[in-house]
Length: 209
Image (cartoon, rainbow, N blue to C red):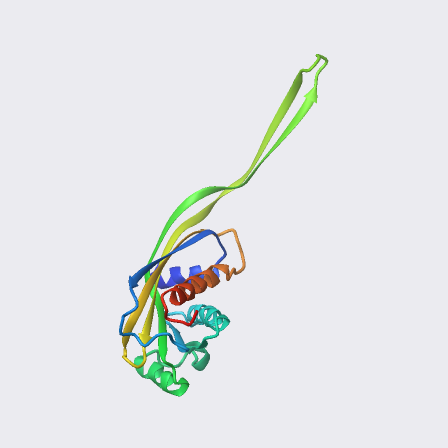
């Protein structure tokens, strides 16, 4: 499984037992022109859909805190070149003062077999003897299923448009179990990633509190 495929699984497949931790990899520069009010959000993944989903979640979090934000995928399509010139033109058109870039750092997956939906029923019956009971225990176990223990690391980096350099960065590390018997999509994991990134931006002074 490639790193890009694994990332797309993170963004689209139902997951359980997810937990995300955040590590500051570059504290806010003392010379940074923060706080920022107009942020261009860019996700650098191979899948356009994966980029769109995460960018949209981050933009939603930024806007909820009163920050003007635009997802790069809202101003391009699958045929638009993903290069510096494309994003520089967006910055000029939007008059952005900062750019938030997210990308995959690492992805690991370990497969295992797991008993699914085990159930137990216990039936008690009285006997002819006083205060003596018999019990019958029945266990139901569905066939085992293949699950993956995943660990995915994303980086989030803020670039100052004025200084044209990175001024702050964090890494998010998410561990979760992916069950192949589940169907559908759960965007809670993506929303949690976006919320943690934006929360740390606020704590570290990149956004107005």
